[in-house]
Picture 1: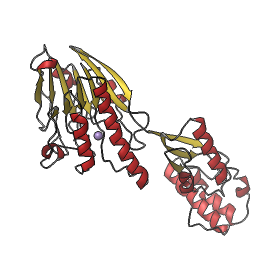
Picture 2 (picture 1 turned 120 degrees about the vertical axis):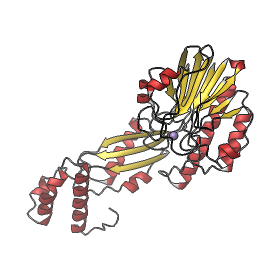
Picture 3 (picture 1 turned 60 degrees about the vertical axis):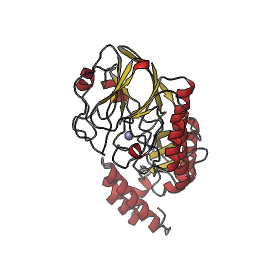
Picture 4 (picture 1 turned 90 degrees about the horizontal axis):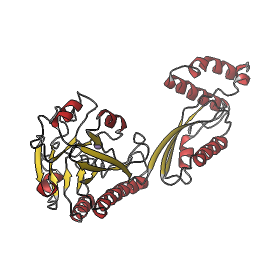
Amino acid sequence: MRILHTGDLHLDSPFSGLDISRAEQRRRELRDTFSAMMRYAGDEGMDMVVISGDLFDSAFVTRETVSLLIREFSALSCPVIIAPGNHDPAAEGSIWKKTVFPENVYIFTSPEVEKIDFPQLDACVYGYGFNEAYLSYCPISGSVEDEERINLLVCHGDTASPISKYAPLPVSVIRSFGADHVFLGHIHNPEAANGALEGYGAYCGCPEGRDFGETGEKGALIVTVEKGRAHIQQKRFSKRVYVAFELNVDGAQSMAAVSDRISGAVLERGLDGEHIVRITLTGSVDPSLVINTQVLSENSGKLFALEVEDSTSPTWNAEALLSDKGIRGELYKALLPGLESTDRSERERAALALRYSLAALAGEDISDI
Ligand SMILES: [Mn+2]
C-alpha cells in the first residue's frame, strides 16, 4: 500500500507575521499546496490519503476552502482518512459535523479509538479525533484486533510530553498497539520526535512553514506499508521556505554599509523569491550608527519577504568616545557595563539608550530610532 500522509496544514491561517497582501498570498498558496498534494496522490495512484489533524487553523473556515476540499477529495478514487486535531476538533457545529463530504472521506469524530475496515486493501485503519480543543489523556489502549491484516493507526497527539493537554501518546503505548504504521500529527518540526518513535510511526510535519519557528523545506510523507514494515519517503510540496540567520556587521558605520552586507549575504546564500527571511544583525557597529530595521526590512529586493532584527552593540572603535572628556564620554562610560553585559536584553537596552542619547546630542531627529 502506498499512502500520502499529510497534516498540520492549518488552512486559512492568518499569517500575521506578513503584511496584508503577502498574508493573503500565503493563504492562497497554502490552499494550492493542499491541492498539489491531493493531485499528486491521484496521479500516482496512491491507495490512501491520511490527514492527521489540524487541516484547518481554527473553527473559522472560509467557504472557498470548504469547496476546495470537496472538489479535491471527490477527484480522488482512494479513501481519505481524517483525524481532526486540536485546532480543528470535530465539535458540534464544526465543519466536520455540518459538511457533507464525498463518500471516500472517512472522519474520526470521536475521542475514542474507532476502526474502519477496508477489505479490498486487506487493511484496518484505527484512529480517533479531537472533539474539543484539549484531550488531556492518552486515547489509545489495547492492541489491534486482527494481527494478520495490515493495521494502520492515525492520531493527532503529543509523543514528546507525558503531561501534554493535546493527547499525550507514550511511545510504549503506540508500540504495544501493534499497528504496522502510525500516522501522527501535531508536531510541526518532527525530526526529534520521529527519531524517538523507533520506526513505529512518523509525524508528517507541516507542508508549508507559517513562521520562523518552521524553517526549511516542508512537504508530505509517502509511506509504503507492507505487513510488519513501512518505508517512508519525504516529498517537498512547500512553495516558500522560511530562513533565519544571524549576520555579523562588525565595523559598519552607515545604513548603506549595513544594507550592502545584507544584500551580500542574501546573494551568497542563493536566497530569492522563494524565501521568507529573517536576519538578526549582530556584531559591533559605530556608536553613532542608527540602524532603522523597518527601512532595511522594506528593502527586501528579490526575497518574498524580509524581516531585519537589530542585535548589534554600538561598541566599534569606542576609544574615541571613551577619551571624550565631555558628556558623550561620560555617557559612554556610564552605559559601558550594560553594553558589555552577558544579558542580551540588558545589552539591547544600553545600546538603545546610547543611540538615543548620541543622536539627541547631535541634534538629530530621534523619533524614528
Ligand atoms: Mn498543528
